[in-house]
Image (cartoon, rainbow, N blue to C red):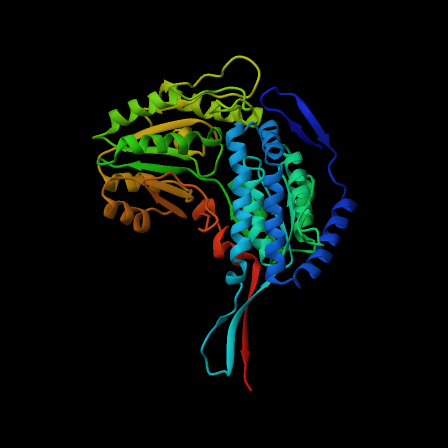
Length: 456
């Protein structure tokens, strides 16, 4: 099956790429292994220069890369530019900090000298999604390459051109080695790629169902894997929240990237004392969003990335309405071309409804009232996911306690929607996966943490 680049705004196919043959795959894995054997011998300064030069290459041609994101998956152009800039900042962060992160840690023991060293594992296979086609790769690849690994990237079937363009940016690095190898492998070939002796470890971003299979395959080969899976992040709006601050944060947290983000706010849990006010403000600001051509600077919401994604989102809304949810805004498929879905706000929610119990990947906001912060925490944790959550309150002591000690998630924010930052670890618990990306913790996911013990 070919990799198809389709414009979700026009629904037209821009380009098709034939899938790699097994011979292609083996040749690329062999080349990646050879590149690793040389790259692992480089100094921290050489690696830093390479990462910095990739960041500069992205900035030098930022508009071209951003336009390709918009063309291939429908992200509004302003957000696409921000994605490329975030990639550049992430690369620079690891360039500036890799030496510190990889310094051996001395440990006092009975030995004359003992310490912990960090050494690269080898070729890391990355199975990547479509919703942030540059950033998802860079947030894994930057720390992995900084640690001395080389990466092989299997992109989503719908965003092949973005993957190939990112490879071109990495090829402009000040390194003699190719550091990123795209792999247009069909899904049926992935098990053999994971088992291949050239592959040292695997990282996967995508659905929980697919993540289970990747973990099984990696486990059979005793290979390290990191899984960044689905999420159903909650926003807890406590009775003392400043709604003038909280609602804009919730709007951005739900509708950024047209709601197609694992860390988007997907469940709104609101104290009954401010519920009506929150709903009205949220409706007003949702109505103000502009849906349209993602190339237009004024567009807030573009089309969803694929037709099947829109169909599934609409199914979730329809089934929830049939179960008693009230549509306060949106909820209908618009006429015309493009895989658009309007901002949709639902109330009268029950926990078993699909818009609450399933992950919703699109601009759908279910709002649920509670009577206390204790109930809010209980409702927030009543999900199989555990990626992120936000708490909005003017009582920072209470907010911090809920964020740090009560919410069963990988990232808990107070008075801000969840986002990824190169300086902080990113990942989840429960069915949102395991392992971490970004920060020193992400860098150390794909290293051999080696004990060295010396007696004279």
